[in-house]
Length: 166
Image (cartoon, rainbow, N blue to C red; front, side, top):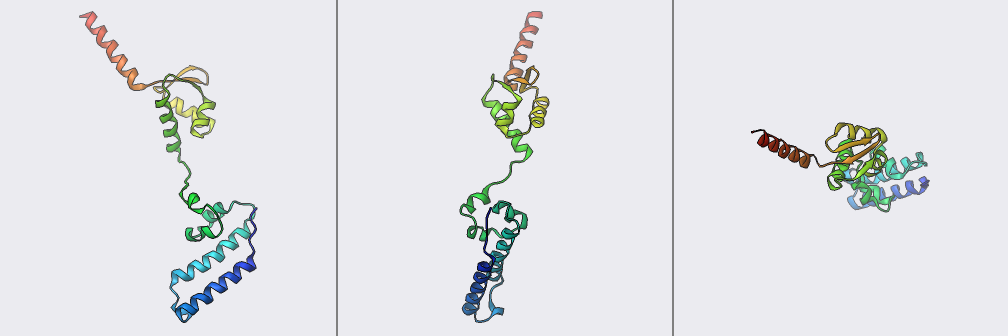
């Protein structure tokens, strides 16, 4: 739970505005971006104060707080800005990428859930959609296959069969 002192945030805002006024001569001459940054810090403080049980980064994302003021409230703000939530396609690609590197491995759905950071239903759907990669051994258990190697072996077997018939 993060606590923000609103009265201190108001004082800081007033000091920043007064500093900008003294720097530019009058309030009308202050560049809009400089004035906006000062007010954005105050807005961020109010947002944090209004949502005490929500992580600060999540509050900032929800309220669209300018990323330039994050550093005033969060220590590792640069790392948080770079993080993004994985999409469904990214998670599926992660599982399939793991599968190409672990051909021949016997795996169950719970292992796939851990690997791709996915739900049971998604792991089940991936195995159903890609029977060429996940060969079903028994309920909930699969062997990881290499579809290209399987196709090549099938072609060679068909070629040998054709040669023996001719």
